[in-house]
Image 1: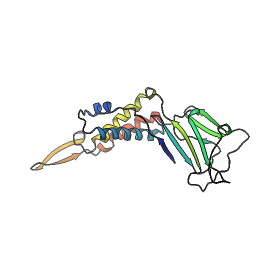
Image 2 (image 1 turned 120 degrees about the vertical axis):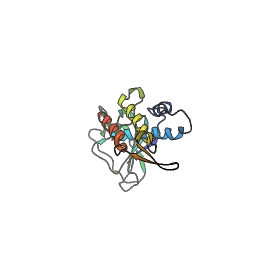
Image 3 (image 1 turned 90 degrees about the horizontal axis):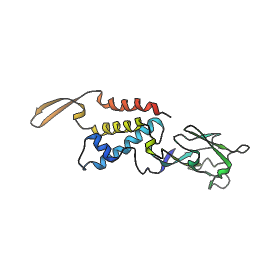
Image 4 (image 1 turned 45 degrees about the vertical axis):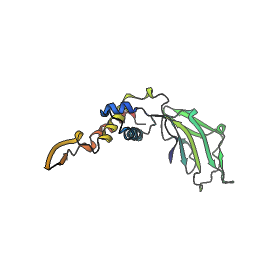
Length: 206
């Protein structure tokens, strides 16, 4: 299980940038748009297993692995804060001495394994959280983000905001009765932008 222990301070797209993309000038939907920025960023991150904005994660493991590979990028060797485990003998949580393991980087990949000639200590596997690894992931400088990332986040915001609106998808406006209207939507509308986002993000798959 991978969870966030410290939320990001900001996102690659600002509220003003999102509103400009949506052509919204009023402030009445600022809270909604702010939420969509986070949702769109999270969606794009999930597509490529990357953290675009820096934050702290905790990865809970049920048992030791010979080589532990952090499942998200980018992470640097000095971004691994701690490895905690529930000791088999005492059934209490202990912090593993950093000198007893190696954090190895290769590109965006981070691998952790015991120091040569040693092994992982016995962990109590029946504990709720036998092993917890805490680390930072994300681009420290958002200017280092590939241009396609911001483009995809903006597109996803547009898609999420347009759901329920008629103008982006309107094919026909048919007046049924007094003040009644029926909207006929193109069948491709629901997937057009999400498919484009997915294809664009393929270049950033980790």
